[in-house]
Length: 424
Image 1 (tube, rainbow, N blue to C red):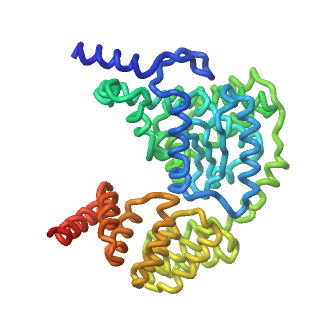
Image 2: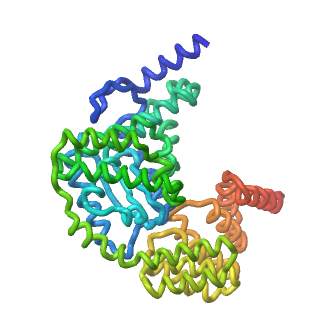
Image 3: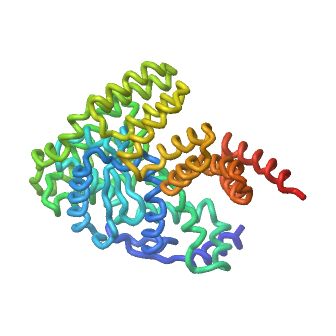
């Protein structure tokens, strides 16, 4: 055991080193360099966005506004040269997240609970601190040392670029990164985020109010919050009091409520449409298909430019075995947001069922281009078999077989069939 620990410490010293945290100034040990941190964020960014609803495209000006405010705060942070990017996700769940290296998102569902620009600044500044203080790198290092010690030791004989460590980052969603933040990380992000706010001129009371709102909502056990922001950023009275005490030592006055109101006007106007859509998804979960369709059509009537509404309508038509109506709804969803994986996947499945394998393959590949999923690989395997492309089919099934659950099992079964068919 002593030799193991000695080897672990030795390998760790070869792979990493002590650095000064750019935000807190504390000495920390890290296995992940700043360059690798940025690379991990880049690798996870597109999958995280796609898997969580995609970009909010009904009002692109809102993302421009949020990015502008985020860049203003990032410029006064302790790591202003990170490649920061801020976007609004088309997701009902109230949440916000930061990937390593400065890729930051806020959900549409959280924006509707904010009252002015200072509260938005509090959210963004908090996430900026997670990136600037290298919280993800810190958690990755702890995970490597505590749970992956033998891999770290083996790494010393492979290469000096942490290939395995970077592999730990690839494929992890933003939710996974957030789940790794500890209590001290959250308190630090609150505190230093308030300082960033003040450097940019904002009233730090916005951060106090934000935590107060979250605490009140958590008392009511609001389900959306429990599955979103509260899961990764748990509120507490301790955080409220810490923010209040720190705010009393800071000075800043910007609230910019009129600017915030203008920027979020479309979102507030569409509140009823999104509530109808949420009711529709609940009706679907309760197997009330006709009710779900009626609610979805009401939502579309109120906001016809929301791609999610059209995709839900397509899903409902699939359940009702109305393929042509489903195709028309998928067409509309794709026309509104061509850079989103999900409607291509649904439309490709319909084309496959109709026997139009060329069209199915084109859509499935388009879906895969935006987000590589086991379902798309499995369907591509089936379509490739129908087109006589057995080598490609084998490759797609092999990829899908690595997934867990029914898709992985189905792909393994297909591999056995293909293997038998290809045997001499």
